Amino acid sequence: MKSIFSTVVVCLLLTGTYAQPPESYYDNTVGESGYQLKTTLYNIIKGHKEKTYGQLWACFDLTDMKGDTLWDMYSFPPLVGKPNPYYYGYQVTQCGTYKMEGDCYNREHSFPASWFGATKNKKPKPMYTDLFHIYPTDGYVNSKRSNYPFGNADKTELYASQNGSKLGYSSTNKELGKDIIVFEPIDEYKGDFARTYFYMATRYQDKIASWNTNSLYAGQVLDGTDTTVYQQWYLDLLLGWHKKDPVSQKEVDRNNAVYLIQNNRNPFIDSANFVQRIWGN
Image (cartoon, one colour):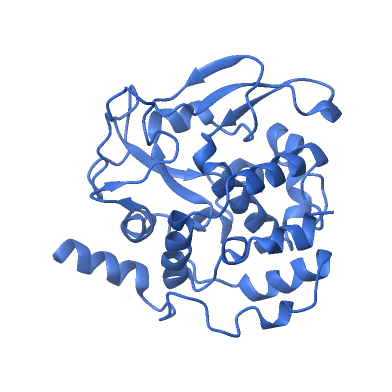
C-alpha cells in the first residue's frame, strides 16, 4: 500500500481530476481541417504539467502496467513458441547496466531526445519528460534502437528482439536517395508509435521546425516546417501505420492515465479522424 500511495502522490500532485476529457475539450475544432485544426489542437494540449525525469519511474506504474509487470512494446509479447523472459516489476528492474534482453527496463524517448537537441548537459523542457512519447522499454533492445528512425526494415536485418521488433535497412524512402537504418516495432504497436509522432508534431509545433538540424537521423525524418513536420516518405509511413493498426484499449487507458498526470491528452487517440483531417490529403 505504501508503494501505491507514494506513486499516486508523486504522479497526481497538482494534476487534473478527470480520467476522460471534459465534454468541451475539443469544441474549438468543430468544422476545422488542415493546419488550422493542427494549431487549434496545439493550443488545447500545450502547457501541460511537467514531471521531473526521476518521477517518470513512478508514473509508469499508472501508465504502463500489464498485470504485475511493465508493458514493454519493444519486447512483449514474445514470438510464438518462445517463453517470456521478462518480468519488470514496478521500480524493481530499472536500468542500470545490462548485457542482454530481460536484464532491466529504462525510460525510452520513442521520439529520440537528440532529435530535439538533448545532450548530456542539456535536457530541453518539456519534451524531455513528456510521457506521451516516453515508454518503459527493455534497456538492451533500446540500445539497439538507439536514435534511428522508426521504419520498415525490409531490406537487411541487423538485429531482432524476442517479440520480433527489428533493426535493419529500409528501402522505402526513395527521396532520400539511399537506404537507411531503421527500427521496426511489431505490427501490434505501429499505430501506437504513429499516433505518438502525430502528437509530437502537434504539441511542439512552436519548436519543431528547427529540430531537423539537430542530428543526422532527425534530418532524415523532419522537413523543417511546423505544418507537415515530416518528410513525405515518413508521413506516408506514419499514415500507413496509423491506418493498419487502429487505436487499441491499451492506448485509450494510457491516454487517460497520462491525462491525470500531465493534464493534457493525445488528440489522435481520442479521435483517429484528426489525423485524416490534418494530413490525410
